[in-house]
Length: 180
Image 1: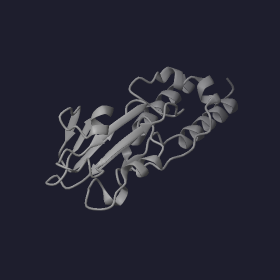
Image 2 (image 1 turned 90 degrees about the vertical axis):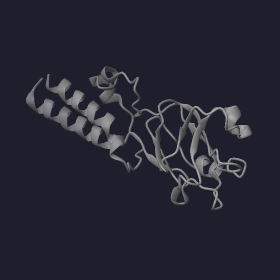
Image 3 (image 1 turned 30 degrees about the vertical axis):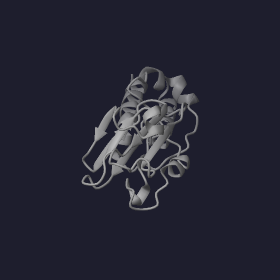
Image 4 (image 1 turned 180 degrees about the vertical axis):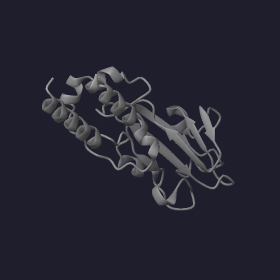
């Protein structure tokens, strides 16, 4: 490959990677109100206004003296059953990384809190062209054909450095393949 073509391809690849640097978004559950029953927080409305994707990070900020977070299944979510937790968080500043499409259900197990609306159903989209999961085949993502045919992303604003880790790996592998 001639040097000018190599430089052009390299610059286009870097520009494409720069545009796709955001792999995930960090969501503070309940925004500035956090995870609580003390304010009029409608978590189902809040969640319906978001587009969650694989790789996104959910932050639960709350007073651990008065609240917790339980990840539960759909049946426990609907009935506010606090006896069948998949995982319980109690620090007051908990994060959860979305690893696959589908629904993720969270409730507070303090008496009456779930029934009062302190529960959220996070629906994760099945398709997102830039999402990096633990099962992503990096050789497919970084092939010259994949790089050339990658769709233009809709950028999200990353608010956490953890969102950029997967792209850094893709960038390094892509650069190594072009140089080789």
